Length: 95
Image 1 (cartoon, rainbow, N blue to C red):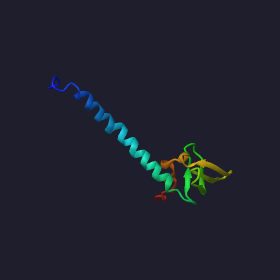
Image 2: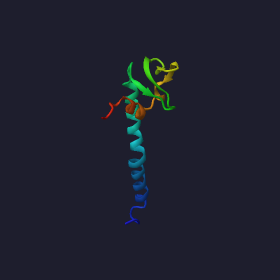
Image 3: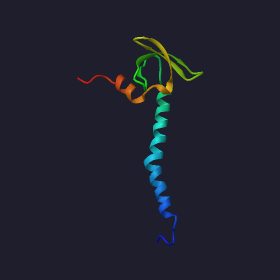
Image 4: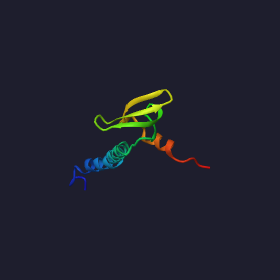
């Protein structure tokens, strides 16, 4: 059978790579984009560098936000906010 279809193994390898690497990455990028677009004032967030704070201002012109921390207010790019950590901070406490 391989003599009839010499490119079949190559095509199968591409399909496997697509479904295990490319498709999940694209899905994650869409989720992160949706998360950054849904941010609003008052949300408690954690940046990817570990800074905790609350959003006090959103700027759509340069896609940034101002986060209030214990040390003061800091301006960040919205992509610097960690989706996973922010969800953990905002979920209700379990009793």
